[in-house]
Length: 545
Image 1 (tube, rainbow, N blue to C red):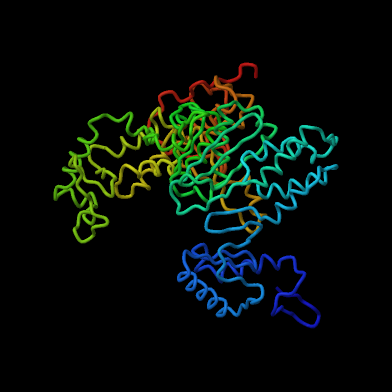
Image 2 (image 1 turned 45 degrees about the horizontal axis):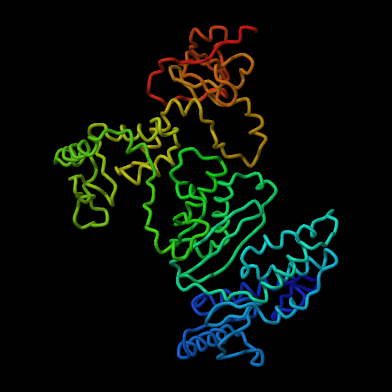
């Protein structure tokens, strides 16, 4: 932190009072200083350093390590503000001991003597203090819903019996809150979720001990959700709330909505459900059902493990059952001495490179780290690429998505480049998919503006090109309507070059009323090798013109 004057540039050697970014800078400093031991036996929040240990001997070593660390960084603590060898500590408004986390008794005393609020500002003040301990109270927001409405603008303050009962119930629950345990390790987490038309609620447990409660009211648009969506939303709410506990570890999620345990097997999902399932895929969670009135702890122990559903892929659905036999025959042919050099796998079967050595599987085929090796014989590579790109179970994915799917099952040299070439030659993709990548811009835009209508010639006589349809709006009619219309039609053969910026095309009989010369900006090269059986399916010239 520094400031500049007419006398020079000055920098603080000691942090002063009053700077708004001082807490953030100091917090960053403490995180960098204590990073080697952070979350192992020390927690830091600004100038509060909490050191925790299992026994006295270990605690002595931890204290010595932190004090030496502070001394090396020239950071000094005030002895009068330090507490050593204490069984419990007050930290960030909570009391922490060996049993778990407690509510600060000083805060509870102030809540006991709190009188009924008479204006919205008093309600905000009470809910602000009580809301800080919401993790201790199950269904906190459901109880406080009748009070929170008075904190909104334009709502008349009308304190009645219902609001008074909610106020007293919150005070009662805060004065008799349970002790929340601290998780030991990162396994055996269990989440219980529930939803109603009033709000969402969840409980996080670890080895039959409550870690935290969470709840929230429904938003305006969520009140129109179906019961199925509300229950699934409560699961998403719990996973997002306790992401720091559940991410990267196995957990079990219990819900009283039975259909949710089969959500991963459903074929047709709403857009909202697809987005939520994409979030659920980040977690190693197993959704199970338990009755509303059942003993949830005993029920959790009696449930058997449910096999995770396999993701259905076209590669295993549409290819014939003789594929392993075909792969084996092709590998035997490829490993012959006269063919081995052509396959370029000599380095993959050497014994001195075990990490990249092809391994023999039970069915006799050679695999690389679980991926079947596909030789270039019997045209196996083209068959696999066709199934993963053009089969009825796929929707013509791009080469990156297609490569990510295929590399989990198959391998061959230069696999990614071959897939990219195959996708670039797909006629359907050339017709339908728009170009998303724009050419890099110039620092001097004047030439770019001048050359906008003077695109250099890219096509030769005899080339096959695709013709952009959008300039013909109102001229060409399609059987399909709207965004289902193809962006390009063709391909058409280039008959001649007209100047530097136009080409004459060989148009079919269906387009006889259209002029055969087009600007090069409306053309793109066609790389597809397959013949066009019906070049203009569903395309007609508007007869009213």
